Amino acid sequence: MGRGKPHPNRQQLPHSPRLLEPLPEKPDTHDHTQQHNRTHMVSTLQSDSGHLLEVHDLQTHFTTSDGVVKAVDGVSFHLDQGEVLGLVGESGCGKSVSALSIMRLIPNPPGEIVEGKVIFEGQDLLKVSEAQMRQVRGSRISMIFQEPMTSLTPVLSIGRQLRESLELHLNMTRQQAEGRAVELLDMVGIPDAARRVTDYPHQLSGGQRQRVMIAIAMSCTPKLLIADEATTALDVTIQAQILELMKDLTQQFGTAVIIITHNLGVVARYADRVNVMYAGKIRETGRADEIYENPKHPYTVGLLSSVPRLDVPADQKLEPIRGDVPNLMDLPEGCTFRDRCDWAVDRCAEDDPPLEEVTPGHSAACWEKHRVRAHAKAAAK
Ligand SMILES: Nc1ncnc2c1ncn2[C@@H]1O[C@H](COP(=O)(O)OP(=O)(O)O)[C@@H](O)[C@H]1O
Ligand code: SF4
Ligand SMILES: [Mg+2]
Image 1 (cartoon, rainbow, N blue to C red):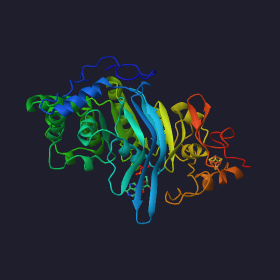
Image 2: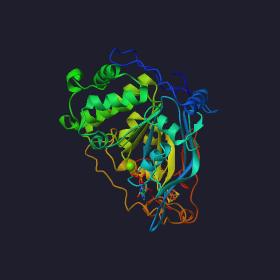
Image 3: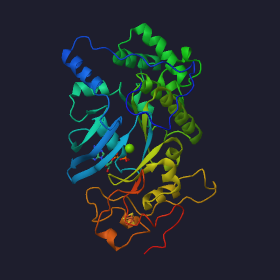
Image 4: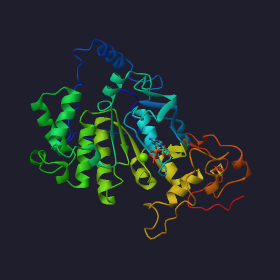
């Protein structure tokens, strides 16, 4: 531990016997190039700024027969060790493509990262070799997805799948990995783990499968966990349990998390900070409580009115944001949210607003940000 800048709001949980000590890293025994690179990586574990992750001006495009989709169009943000960041926005706004770009898993063709830097532990992941990147994936950065059935192999027991990850990434012997697999299942709250380790994915409930995915993702004590709509398919009670579990585990291990979701209501409760994305760009960023209570972008206000909130009576009608997300191949001039915005003024048709600070640590990309209020429909113009 002790790498990167610890997040100030984070406290270590008191030691729990159910939680495991981090394991030593897998040694490189035969490949001297890798050994050298690994040494280099370890010696440059954080950037000058001390952030665990810095994404600078990331641009990822897809070339299709109809034109170029600017799925991620100049995204910049940072993340500290142990911090939980929410990445929020409607479907198609570029959340998954941002995550896959960080992991360098963009299918090429049709996709390409055309610009930007992804500085992780002091190194630009967009510049390292594919072999180094494979080492980063699954051991330094883990990712979990919405539907565990597509990530878990149906014909292998969950114990075997955990074991394989441990043998591959941590160089454990089979016996060590078997013991650890049971510990991990116990850690993520699978009852009677020693017996369930022989179960196949279809024998588990959706929530339990997601717990197994978390066990696999956390098995190498990654520095960063990216959860892409990881709880979306589950009912709300199970969603809350899984998010609690993820938060507990990541606090224990000092892992930073990016929670990707279209539901701002969910993430506000678990994230330290939130980035709100729209049409490939971050349109608002700030502390989760600020974004929730004092949003400064009309899109964020729209997202908040369209999901159930804890601070609003349950019978209050949800209001979807009117209109549709714009076509990323043919974005309008000016602000891309204009056609759906109740606050729009003439200037919005001509100039695309930059992300500007409203208060320290809270920025919004809107010409009318000082007029925007939560719960309030604009008396526009
Ligand atoms: N393989 C692909 N080919 C073409 N376009 C893609 C591909 N993958 C993603 N896109 C486009 O990139 C945009 C952002 O997608 P994505 O990041 O998956 O959105 P979300 O915010 O729902 O995760 C969408 O318009 C999507 O159609
Ligand atoms: S810049 Fe204008 S159109 Fe865009 S969100 Fe702000 S008020 Fe609405
Ligand atoms: Mg997605």
